[in-house]
Each structure stands twice: as structure tokens, then as C-alpha cells.
Length: 99
Image (cartoon, rainbow, N blue to C red; front, side, top):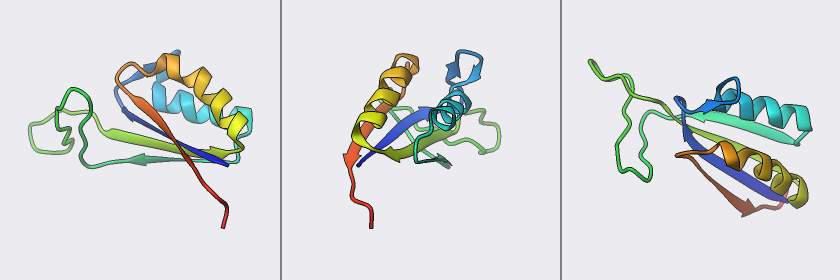
């Protein structure tokens, strides 16, 4: 089995709104085994800007991680569809074994 993690900001836009909402809807529609969206308090990416939403006077985007798991081919097919929408985000995969 393969686990994918997608790192992005909540300000990234998808075809019809927030990218994280589009990705979660796509994963649900395509029947992956499971997916979870995590919102973080802090994070930084390739641009080396520390995102810290919620601080007084700071309007910043929340870092988001979407994790999903399924058979290798299903995860790879889902990522083929998702990756073109990732402008500043990144996707990684890990081989996993069910407990």
C-alpha cells in the first residue's frame, strides 16, 4: 500500500474554490480507502516564509496537509490528477503496511 501526503496552504485555489476542498472531494469521489486533512498552526515551504496564522495583526494562510492511503496504483492515479493543481504545494509518498 501507498500513503500520499500533500502539503499546501489554504489560500491555494482549485478549479472551483479552495484547492484542499477540491482534493478532498476528488478523493472521496474516486473511492480512495481513506483521507484526512490536517490544519497546522505553523509551517513553511520552498519560499522559506514562516506561516503563523492567528497572530494578532497577521493575515496569513494556514498550512494544510492532506494524507490518503490506498493501493499503489490508485494513489499514483490520484496524484496524476492532483499534481497539476499544486502551484506552491508538494506531494510525497511513503510505502506502508496495514497493521
